[in-house]
Amino acid sequence: MAGAVRGDDTTWSSGPVFILAAIGAAVGLGNVWKFPYVAGSNGGGAFVLVYIACVVLVALPILIGELLIGRLGHHSPPVAMHAVARQSGRSGGWSLIGWMGMITAFLVGTFYSVIAGWTLVYIVKAATGFGGADAASVGRQFDALLASPGVLTAWHSVFMFATVIIVGRGLHGGIERTVKFLMPALLLMLLAMMGYAAVEGDFAAGLDFLFRADFSKLSGEAIVTAVGQAFFSIGVATGLMMTYGAYVPQNVSLTRAALVIAGADTLVAVFAGLMIFPMVFQLGLDPGEGPGLVFVTLPAVFVEMPGGSLFGTVFFVLLAFAAITSMIATLEPIVAFARDRWSMRRWRASLVFGLAQWTIGLATVFSFNVWSDFHPLGGIDVFAGKTPFDLIDFFAANLMMPLGGMLIALFVGWRMRPATLDAELDFGRRVILKTWLFLLRVVAPVSILAILVNGLG
Image 1 (cartoon, one colour):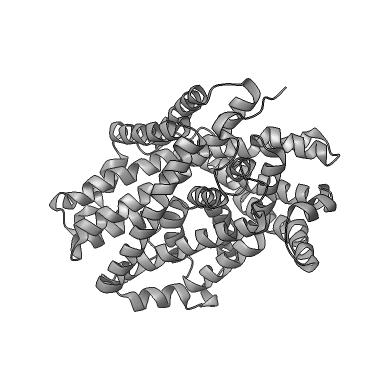
Image 2: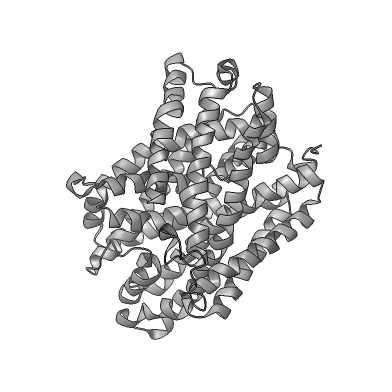
């Protein structure tokens, strides 16, 4: 029999703190690192419009449903999902959704910590002017970093240690205290970096790139990518929103909270583009650089631009802050489950599962160097050429996350009692409730199916 979550971990101290924590969970490397290079690789403005549509029509409806399951179940994802299924007169087998979400978050955390460790390395590099390197050679520092398993492991360890400490200190003493400081600081740094880009960069070119829609550059692949990016960025179907929803006070409007969370997450992603692209265009660099945009192209920008050392440091501190608020949300669901199911103390659960994340994370570390030619499932066409890191990322982001999102949409849309949805969600007008149900029942599942087919292809 599952035990209740006890102590100061029962509820958030207030609605605004919950929203701040949820925004912190959603806003991460997906916004500041991934969104700009994905937008840059898919034509800019047209992709941004499709991305925003995917947030509104796919990610937001599922986010509302996931928060609702969390608050109704008031437990960790597997236990909450089982409880809500039984309350709805459905099979307890629907708890599979909770298991998938929790495991997905855990797996994402194993490689997220490694990539987040890169931001810590680059804080030091930027503060020291990248060792006096010129723009032509600064990119080689990233190659040298990836080639060093010892350095990657050290910074992965630092980041994982910080995550364990924060989660171990509890909901109020750890997570709330952290997001209350880091999220306002992140916003101030983001605005400062946008100001710097406006003064020193080609801001007009950045605006034109992000907001001028050229649909001739938009492919079917880009549309599927936009759906996936909306999922990845907001963090639905990873158990973290279900877990955070379990702590939401009853007087908090889930629909309004979800709108604020999704809106803030999208705004940060757009602001990140306005921060990065003007600097890239100022030096005539390629906005479609890909994953290397932040760790290869931007360091070259900071080396060349006035005040680059200072603002480069601010930029990578911003990245680190965004990463830690998301990273703690990948560990919290499984810690909550350990407390639910085994009555494990929070500190012990944080240490046990934090150590497990750190250990599995070594597979990602080695995938960039000593295991770069190791392809465990290379005999299967769809997995050909994939390193251990690629496989973890593939299963978590391309399969488990979209499948979990589809199941949440189908369960809430088709299997929960309409009276429960009407009572728990304050849409105000009946037509809005019906529109939300249509999005959950039809639009979201079809869109997510496209992600799954694309991922398997």
